Length: 487
Image (tube, rainbow, N blue to C red):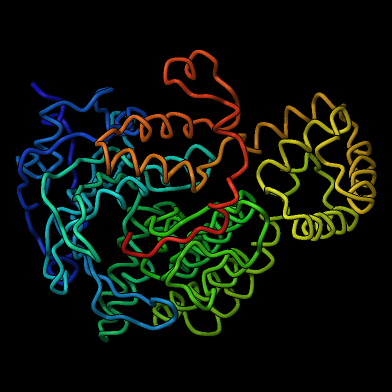
């Protein structure tokens, strides 16, 4: 019996009622083919290490999945600061939740499975290009230890869809701990359905924060937890140099996971104003703005919970965001620098560091890998007198830690990636995929990003990965490259 028939589906969200979704089967496709499959993600729901023909038929929507109740979720959301009431899963379907052998539930979602009533006249499909980008982006962040949705597979569809030009289509099979967004609450709040806001909050607590269920102030504590998870997530983004690009409230989840990969990017030469989104002409979602936008989005979520918690109480909670974020970010930067005494001297050191990175257009990720070798190898860090002075101060702070250079390097290399999903690497994989139907580079990058902190000679030989090539700084012509939301 194929393992797909053994998947233990739960369909808890469907019990909330039709106000929360549209129940719909995926639209069938012609001759689906596999672009890439992630065995590590398959293991989360007890699937085999490879996706065969049965997998393609089941997860493309051609054959019903036993036990699944596919549905398109209703939600609204603030997009670039303006509320849009007509969102919802226009092209996505939640098949249901799969309970694995460890009793952990995972949402299984198809992105690009055909139009729903939320499609607003669009075709309900996803482009192959955007599906590959999300596939690689989600696996790269997971490899960095950052909470994220996961990508089980990209399934190609042999049909053209039209954006600005004809595009190849695909379905992304997404795995997530939850698909409940800030915008899910906003949808019912903005349509004056307070009872459904309460029902959604109860569902979220019972199924995703169950330990809060018997707390007298469970709604307040629920918001506090979402705030804390959000602050922690964004602190991790900032530390690693990840820019989401579209931090709309419909792209923020109650579990603090990175959700929906559109025009994302990683900082190359350090530039706080960088946004990877070509539509973001005012820099609303630039790297330096992300912590503030997290705060803004949490305020919008708080508005929906006022009848359950109270305005004054929520204001008390929201005031804690900045110190909580600062604490998490400080710890992240301490780990990156190999320093655990996070005092005023440390704060001064990091402030001076960021200014030097800006002044010298330093590659953000490679800087920390090089710094881990200091003082043994310093030639690539000697930019000018300012950098030399900073390195001396850095060494003083390291020496007071009481750890030797070898121990510090080991700690730093464990948190500072050698390999980052750089724009030119993604572009190379896309060009091979779109022009030649060669998906080898997609697989190569996915394998490399599963553990981006060290070389793995045997694995690299198997997948023909040149360590030096994949760890080099981004070529000049790709610096600051942007992508549109529809790409």
